[in-house]
Image 1 (tube, helix red, strand yellow):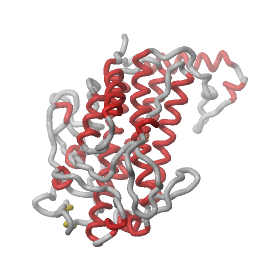
Image 2 (tube, helix red, strand yellow):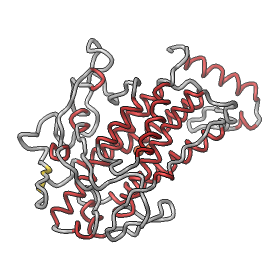
Image 3 (cartoon, helix red, strand yellow):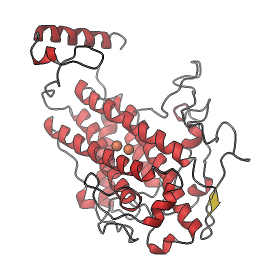
Image 4 (spheres, helix red, strand yellow):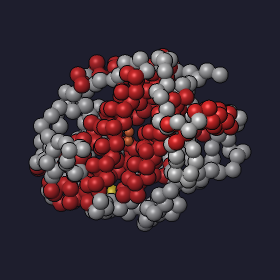
Length: 365
Ligand SMILES: [Fe+2]
Ligand SMILES: [Fe+2]
């Protein structure tokens, strides 16, 4: 592996030298480095394995887009980039308690997901592989609260069981799920029931603490979703063979980490409270019995931790990144969260098949 980057640089330079001062030689990167112009598309059909990995990612992005659109309709910015919905004033205000820029961030995250699946499907087609379309499974009823678009959904944001263990996982200096560790919940109550992350109807707009609890649930759910994407891309990249397909995976993946980092920061601003309608508690994470290294709200950068083997020094990393079974792991994680509550057997069969095909892909050589 160590020699590969060097070889690539060498061959790229000699390619530029051969191209002389034509279009390729004339293109300049910031910093004055010569680089080739946008490369011609890689030619040829993708292998079954590479196509399966990109198809699973396209499916995951379609599902992400569907859930983010529901958020954007109610608490984001509705515009030509992310159309649909009219916004819900009360809910937007509650979400804004986490940060005054939440509406912009929700909008931008939604647009990112839209472009992720649209690009992946276009790329799959360009390399002779079938794109992914889940439209037949848009069957779930959505929110009927003021502002929501009247359309059927792929995902259900109204009965979520949100795993918030990413909070302590990224703050731990010793634990790594790839080394068998498990992690405490930041909001234990969110794992003990089914909670709406959007107002289901206008009846959810009060009392104020109930609506704030829904906004807080959304705030933690944002990060729970995006930490999943942050792990999924590097985990799958390890089994991609085609260099350009690998470039696609490596170029989209880090944007999921940018999302996660943002949401990880905002979740820490969720006001501590108890929902008077169902007893759901959002604790003050800076106070006992929480508090300290594993909970402190401003520790939003990943703490260095153990990686690969405990014999190595600690390192700041994404975790988990184990590649074996990652696609099915993601399907199980999203299913356990209640994101697909109400979906048909045919939906689960389709998603499971896409995951199994991605998990069957192997890296050659
Ligand atoms: Fe994405
Ligand atoms: Fe994402």
